[in-house]
Length: 81
Figure 1 (cartoon, rainbow, N blue to C red):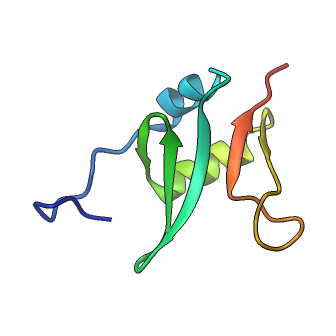
Figure 2: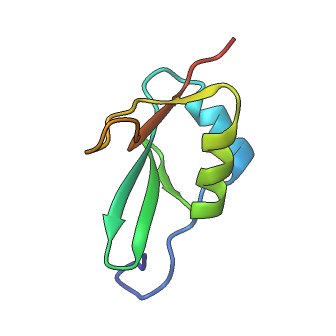
């Protein structure tokens, strides 16, 4: 993913992303692009794929299973303890 100036957008890191996801209105979403999967925290910003995978693997993050096929997720949220 590139900005208009052909530079990658500034990515949100793991700790900041996890902290942001603690707010009930924030979701991690996965979209498709010509270059593959792209992840965003909404509201928030761009998340690199490796960071997104770390967030998804966190024990307090749950997928919504809202993908096209059963059992697949396109959005994740922090469920807390």
